[in-house]
Length: 349
Image 1 (tube, rainbow, N blue to C red):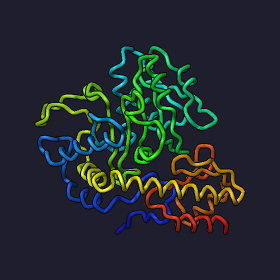
Image 2: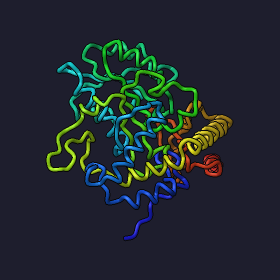
Image 3: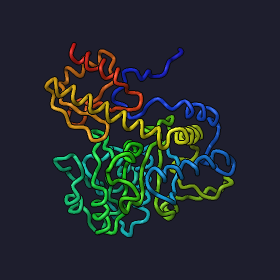
């Protein structure tokens, strides 16, 4: 039976969006290419090198190392894996705020690493003092988030870098969603702002690349070396990526999106998202709802579950935070007209 893809006209909770037209076309052209075998597929391998270089520009790293992953989950897992492999302990742990993405729970489970979660502060950001209290000589990795999934908060990355350095641990920043918004803000979050060792930044989120196109970046090539395994039956001799065969479509799509949008297009996306988030927050507050003030373009509001269910029945794709607030992510496909229609339906239900 013929199926049509999701229409984005009422999607308000997703961190993926409609790809840029150039990215869609590029992905189609490279569907059969495998960047996991770079000597057999040199064209897509060169595109990947250029993607990593541009992601370095986005994140403030002049000599970036990394690759295009399947998404944030893989990149976060790779950060944990590299830290575990480099740690001088047989009992490594990872320390992160409670606001960290659930992929770190997956990583800890798969890699048999203890995950220690610290309560966040009243500002919904990581508390460096609480992180430091959980870290010890067996801590291999400290994690900060630059654009949390639920509230769009930016952790104090320089202070977390100090906490990591105090126990000789690596610092990983999960900027999977926020990485294409933060360059146009005053937040300190990037490799240029602190001693960040690894970072996740996903072109298939705010970057408007097709799925799958995540990004794993490292300051030091030794981190990729810690991930590498021999590949004796391929023309290339080793591989640092988690998967073998990878998406040439994702690499080419990310390259096309970055070429079309960095930096001016992303600046416009960030400004429009911020304006829409502020408009929606004001609209909800004026109707008497408690709203978590947006920092990056995510709005969370304490709207009753029955109302959320009624909105979902009207076709709105909305989801709750862990504490039950309705959550709206102002992605590039979210227009002011969509939000006006959403608020009108909220009034009617």
